[in-house]
Image (cartoon, rainbow, N blue to C red; front, side, top):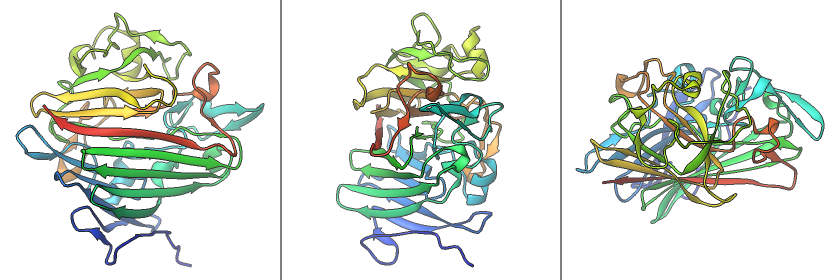
Length: 370
C-alpha cells in the first residue's frame, strides 16, 4: 500500500501562495520513498529562506552584505539524499531532546527510561531517528507582512525510548523586519521530556567561504555549564570571568579557541552551553554574531534559558550546496535551548512536560548589516 504523507497548503492554488512570499516545490524522495517538499519564503527586502519538511530543515538563508550583495549564510545540501547521508544535523530541528542526555537514561516520578545511544554512551539530539530524520506535515500562508510555514509532527509513545505521544508544531515566520521567527510548541499525553532547538550552521561571509574564526561573537551570559570528557554537564554553573568563555563583549571566535584550557580540549573547541542572563521565559537578546568583511550581523533573541555555541569542530569537508566543502570550523551553531542533560540535574531548569501543559518557546534570528 502506498504510504500517504499528510501535507496541506492553504489559501492558494497551484502550490503558489504569493509569488513574492512563498512557493513550494518537490525536493525528491527519501530512501523510504517518502516525498519531501521545499518551501521558499521571501520578504519585501529580498531575503530568501528555504525550508524542507524533511527534518524541518532550514536549507538556506540568503541575505545581503553591507554593499547589497546577497549570499547564502547557512550550510546545507542540494538534495534530500545528501541530507540523509552527509548531514551533521545541518539546519534541522532536533528533538525530542536537543543536545545530550547522559548514558541515555533519565527518570520521571521514579520511573526510569532508556534511550537510544547514538553519541558514545550518551543520547544526542533525540536518538538514532530523531525529528531531523522525519517528514513533517506542512501548512503555509502569506500576507503583506510575513510568510509563514507551520510544520507538525506526532512522535509516538516509545519513540527512541521517550514516553508519551508528543504532538509538535514548529512555525517559521519570515517578516519584513528581516526576522526569521521560530516558534516551538508541544503537548503530551504522558509525562516526558522535551527540548527542541534549531541546528543551523552559520557562516556570515557565505556558506563554504572559509572558516568562522574572524566572526565576532557576543553572548549575554555570566556563566556556562562545564562538561566532562563526554561533553555531559558536571552540574556546575561556572563564571566566564577570566576564561576563554567570556563573550560578554564582542570577541573573535578564534581569539582563544586554541587556548590551553581543559574545557576547550574536551570539546575540541567550543561546544558548550551558556547560561543566559535573563528571567525564565523572557524574550531577550541572547547573542550577536558579526562578520567584519561582509558587514553581515545576526542577532539571536530567545525565551530559552541557554544557548549552545558550537564552533564546527567536527566538520569534515562534506561537499555541500554548489559543491562547496564544509571544512573544519567552516560554520558555527547558536542553538537556543534548555541545558544539556537537564533531566539528570535537579538544579537545572526543568525540561519535564506533563499532560495539560504546553511546551512553548520562541527564538528570533534577525539579519542586519553594519
